[in-house]
Image (tube, rainbow, N blue to C red; front, side, top):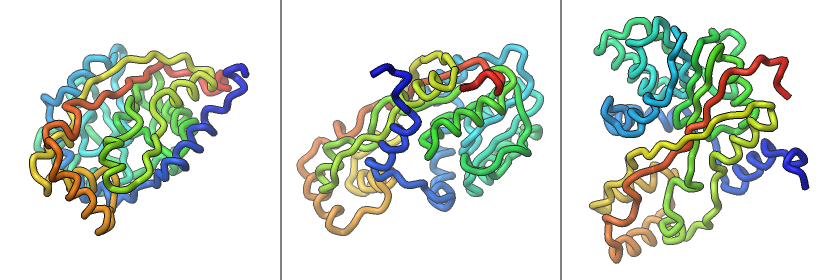
Length: 270
């Protein structure tokens, strides 16, 4: 079978279904906004520093930051741009981002409530579009098409390298079936089939869920990634955790694939 005969956008959707991946509500992220600002939005964060080093702002004056969270990328690049739009569907994330912007004096950032699946026709086009750690979407082709349309110059996206947020051993200990999430390979091939020949690089980021030194912390990390766990699953995990070395339960880093490309005119897309 030729690669062009494979519908990678459909394979991506099928893998999401197999993994039982459901869209998290804005409320889910509202509750995590403060902690994400504390743990993953530090200006000295290794992931962020590596990402910023790879984003080419040459000839760029404006930024469209999709899935901006607590304003991690928007605020980090604000002093190099005249206009920044931070976009997220979580009011809590946007509230935290706006507060951080006021504290830093970044008054030229606009915060826009919008989801990947919403209509973007009224959103402004910018020179650079970024989607950092926000690309586990329901429709990969549609998402990449929208980002490409928003950017006049370049698009930067980051995607999972690993196929699971939680170790398969932990999932098995909870009594759950281990099914892998779609990783960056799907996005790369979806772009190829759209007529976009993207570049691929890799970022080695700190694992925000590395600390499993206590049962309470471990349980919190598991719930963060797996969502609600039943009382039975909690008991199974507690028994399993008691015999583990907490230092080895999570890798020290989480790798991300940076996929970027020069914006392609809509009429040239397949």
